[in-house]
Length: 115
Length: 115
Image (cartoon, rainbow over all chains, first blue to last red; front, side):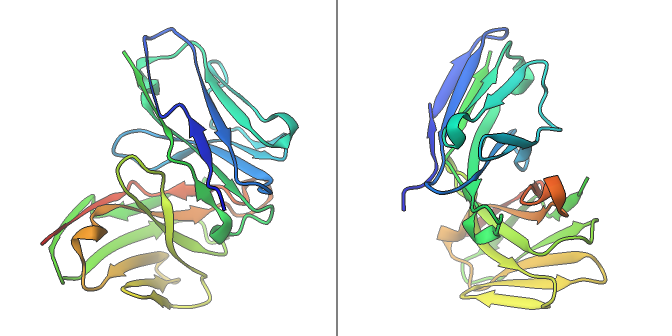
């Protein structure tokens, strides 16, 4: 079974620039999550999709972050404009519709550095 | 929102020793507690998980001990090996509704096993 694919692996941008991350979940996984992992901390949920609908985006800084999941498969997360404190690893995860822990898989993440 | 507190922040053990990482949670509406293992440059990977109706679960050298009354659970790694050197996260799931499947992570424990 192919894992969760993310790209790019690394990205360096200047503050106030925009950036986008892409995620392709495991085939058949209806639920998709974006997490932000700041160095030295645990991952923090940004947004959760069920198919192409948003389930929870309560911790997404909506003034600068946006995410979409077209056709219930791939997803993109965008930051515009970026701030220094956005430097982190952005992890995508997907799970079976019932959310069972054994079906919860993370990608390798995109490491963003804002300078 | 579910809060999860993990300790210690870092841990150094000798090869063959026992590594113990602790986690405390607040919310009691849950149905499993997972531990994740993360290597540098990789996303977290499920290591072992426990349901609250049992007090202990063992898989190979890894054991979860669960204390429901104290709202605590811990990870024990027996016969620790250098290959176990990684960051370990405990997590707790959302209680239901729109939070179902959402994981709240602890701060992480950096484990170093010396040969």
